Length: 247
Image 1 (cartoon, rainbow, N blue to C red):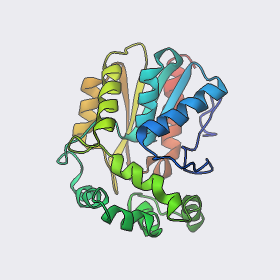
Image 2 (image 1 turned 180 degrees about the vertical axis):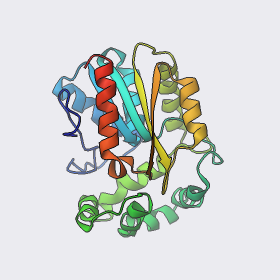
Image 3 (image 1 turned 120 degrees about the vertical axis):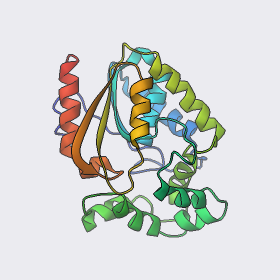
Image 4 (image 1 turned 60 degrees about the horizontal axis):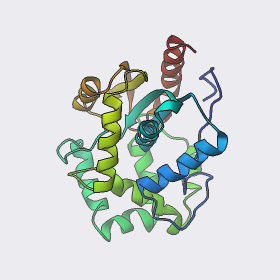
């Protein structure tokens, strides 16, 4: 974040994650969005440039679609931006997500230990993760209960029309993204690395569907966790894009 030299830079931890609280809620997409709405409102944020990765990108588009007068632009990388068929999900992830979405199996995989994080994080990055960084990722999730948001997020991935509520919200913000030429959008892409979710077809869909979309494609390799693999490239792309659109 310090490398993005413009404006006030804020990075909220989603509810139940990072240093945020752990209320007894279901951790659905809608509940995450509700808490994020409250955060924006509590800080009185207007004229916002949103930058999102993974589910952060989905939440950014969702918030923008519901608060069009408060958003100045959206930049996103390796984000969940549309409902997918199982065939659209890269083959390497299909078996894993079928297991996670299976009652009882997903609980064992994610809730009953830290192996999912400890093994899954390095498996989705092109750059080796230092042990202290692994520890930082693990720290918020020491117990079975604390790992519930991780399971809910994984099960929320919109595949084959389910979960229907997530599909509906994505279709809604997709309509907004297609009809909002006044809001600049920036897609930040890299050469595919470990665990990459975006395919060339995903990027082509974004280019064909989203109004006022620019792309910053890089020759460097990144896994799914692009901010870990290519933080400087992302910061530079966002900074240049912000300056281009008025600073």
